[in-house]
Image 1 (cartoon, rainbow, N blue to C red):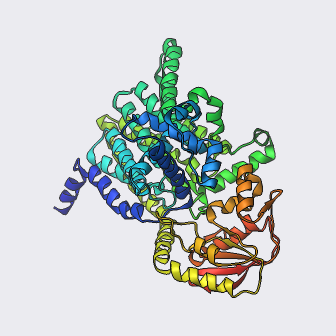
Image 2 (cartoon, rainbow, N blue to C red; image 1 turned 30 degrees about the horizontal axis):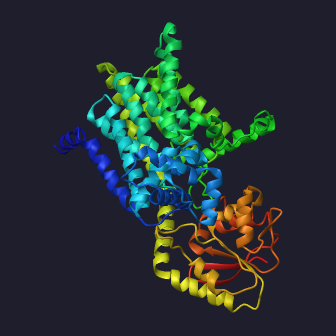
Image 3 (cartoon, rainbow, N blue to C red; image 1 turned 90 degrees about the horizontal axis):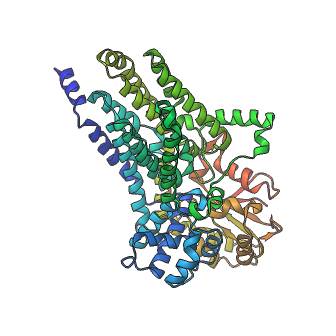
Length: 578
């Protein structure tokens, strides 16, 4: 009797929707916690400047939404980003000047389509809580992608339910770092295109949506491989040329919607996309071997970057290597040779591209749609009664095992993500004032008249800019001959002067007492480094985050022995390096 009720429950056609709703509820608290990582802060800072520009120069009610694109140049073009960020001013121009000087220079800044920046800019102009809205949109995007995935499946409700569980147990969807990111927003666009393909084998409308997705974030491009293989497999030779031209034009149309600058500045469009390769190195056998080993290691070793987000381990965080192996074995076992070939070819092309361009786990994000495209196809192509029996024999255990593997992989990072997030927000609320006062008293009591303080505590901030320490208060009240309080958003660049643009160097030189001279960091004496104790407890490759900070970003520019801990202000460690 109990098994009968369980079977009836699992066979309920509404269960996949219930699973999606439960996922939304479970993740909602995490997405709405008022603490933001550096990339989120950086992106939303640019978006807020777009919003300010819109409010100052355009009436939200007087112009159609397409005119919002005009605001992009002021924030997203290269010169303007420097001026607006570092001078903190927006130029007031009338609409005619905007049209003449701005419209032709819209840019896909940092390789993200203009649509991404415009969406954030409009929201920032409408509400001060736009960061929260963007996060909720990320969560809704995941849920919408899950909806299109399960709707693509032509099978019984039990397989649908477990497949939906597998999708929503994908570790990256439980990722705790950047939640305001194009990867989440383009996920439902990709899965809608897949859904339309599995629904009616349509290629035309899909091409537009795939172009839109690639235009917003180019790293999703490998998700095109399954689609292209299907197209070339099914097209008749005498129609090939005509069909290719049509689909290519539709794809370009999608790209243009996401980044209109492709029309008048195609070279600028491609130059804005970050590149992680050098042609000369790709032709070097030693370099090829090194990159191949690195690619393999990146798949299994979970590490965090300076901004505390998980940055490697794509076979743990994106899609399990073991799950791919099982999927391949099932395809082989049920004699779906053509599917096995297509899966193998798509993965081969994916890894070739990642070998050339991959670096961080979000570059490998397209592995999710590729894997679930073939899971969908595996289920849908086995439509006869006999095949369904074989399929259930292999597939249901595969789904259950894969879900268990995913949960195990999620546990590798989610506990630490939660700890980082909730400890930080708690200390900001309860100890920001006392920690700041303690730091001020400590440095005011020092005899040194010439020192530099490097702050490594403020990676995470609230929506109103609060962080572990009130850096502005410290800067205002600590009166010394030479003082520089460098926030983490410029931390990486600060110790790699060559990465600065000339205007950025000028800004830092003017505002930080000649900090830069010929791309070198000037340390006279008495260098102090502040770090947050819970971050120090994070271990990467046997080293804590503080050691990694010092080794990677400070030691190359400054000679010092091991850091000497001189004092603690609550959870703040004060280290004297020189």
